[in-house]
Amino acid sequence: MICKSCRHCGLCSGFAPGGTISISSELCRKNPFSCDSSLPPNHIGIAVDIGTTSIAAGAYTLRDGKPAGFAGQPNAQIPFGADVVSRISYSMEPGGLERLHGAVIRQIESLCRKLVMESHERFLSRRQGRAELKRIVLAGNTAMECFALGISAAPLAQFPFSLPSEFGFSVEAKRLFGSDSPLCGADVYFAPAVQSFVGGDTFCSMAACGFFDSGGTSRFLADIGTNCELCVYSAASKEIVCTSTSAGPAFEGYGIECGIPSQEGAVYKVQLDGGKIKCFAAGGPEIRPRGICGTGLVSAAASLYKGGLIDGSGAFSCGEEKIVLADGIYLTQKDIRNFQLAKSAVASALCILSEEASCTSGTMYLAGGFGMFLDAQDAIDVGMIPQFLSVSPVSAGNASLCGASLLLLDKKLCRDALSLARSVRHIDLAQNRSFEKLFLQNLNFPRCF
Image 1: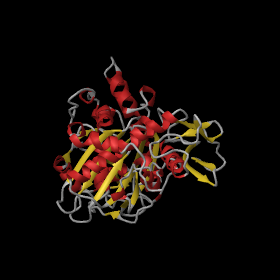
Image 2 (image 1 turned 120 degrees about the horizontal axis):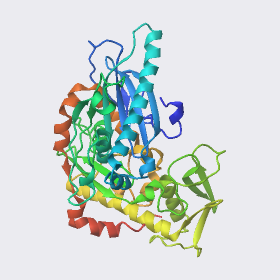
Image 3 (image 1 turned 180 degrees about the vertical axis):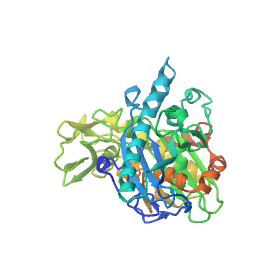
Image 4 (image 1 turned 120 degrees about the vertical axis):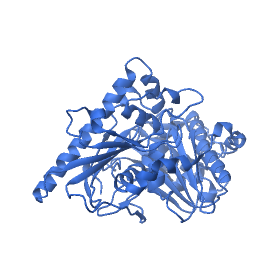
């Protein structure tokens, strides 16, 4: 079920009609949950994913977990900084934290009020009374949750990059929205963080992908962006290991000469057919390409490498200073170098996790907007996803929002969430001696063509 406003960005793709939540519309596996059948039918809860780029929300009836509405918007904090690092810096300026907090809280309140009103209309038409909002669950990276709560994210800006709060607790809605807000009868739960740069959104993604289920097969999770969160669950040891790595802004479309964020007109896939380059832009075939986004960069690198236009070291082999993809859109040698740095960071971190967890196989889940539109085979071809994970990469869609919905509806998961987050072992790549060596090795493209 995808709302009209999110049809192209996939904000709501974490939902399926009925009493189950699917990780994404593409996945068959679904997450069961335990609702309280004694609750009135008009009691609802809202799960919110506070993404750096966009905010998505889903409303459910708490009695049976049926969807009651979905909504999504670009994050209102974008004018204060395009990425997390710039917003953390802005938050440390006089009045910065207050402005960031106010922007996100007003937006969350607006989205929740919209969903409550939609639920009102539905319930009244069925003579079930007016919708009553009882609970909100917020999930986001550590900085986003700090800004939503209104606490300083400054510890994330300097070594030793300590965790400002573990979260995993509830506050009264009136603390965030004010005593005059129509939402003040609800409680607001903040998803627990695992580590400074492995926040509540990653915890929720792990929950959605079955990392906290007993038994099952081994699985890997990657949420790829400027900061990449990566996790592995070993079926043999029953241990969860996670890490984060900075990939730079290339996957967000920044630092690339013709790069743009994932939006209408962004080239998300590139094909080389008979020597001709063909680009696919978000929004449909009638939309004129305006630039290239992160998934398009992966796809272009894979196609150009397989087509012989760039060699295994990433160097242009065509004798040109730039490779034209479409009218006004091209890649430079520097763009490819920036991409190699980003893809090597991901591949090297996955190799470290595999070694630490003694786990060399399993299902690979690709979470978030990037993972939703990424062609996994392209990522394998350029060496971003290691060969040992090439069997079954799966797009997990908005796994963070799905996991936040599970926290909303499953009392046991919510009760155990903080202890589960504390049980995850975190690997600091800055202290890992193997990472630098692997990083240098993974810069080149694999020799498989």
